[in-house]
Length: 185
Image (cartoon, rainbow, N blue to C red; front, side):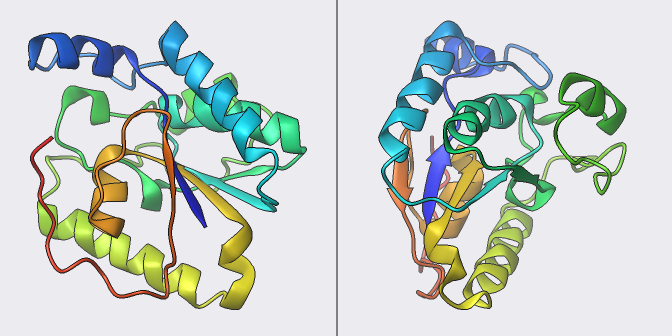
């Protein structure tokens, strides 16, 4: 499977410059973020992807969109691969707003408020990553042709690897969990 971190968001732009939470809820991609999403779509077109899974955060959906369009695939949206709730940017958009913004996506299974109500402890996101790892491993070889568009914290909890905006890594969910997670960003 391929894990793709969303492109640069408005949050990433401001946080990188100031190291302070700019207070942007469910930020959109910047122009650079859109360019990163397009570049990922171009690069991933040759990877034999048959399934796209994405987080419901706007930045992840915007990153998944060009890949889905290029490959002619639907996007399966699940909060399971969402970001670790630690900043204002991790407050998502309510499901009704997402349905309006993304009418072609099946969001009927998404609860109105699908993100955690309070900061998510590290153990909780690690448990989500373990659940996702187990679900993917149970698919047999089907996971090998999947693309997961997710976030820094979730990808870190799943793999132990810090991935930059717009970058992707290969991942085998049948491998053991990382022995240690270093949360410093």
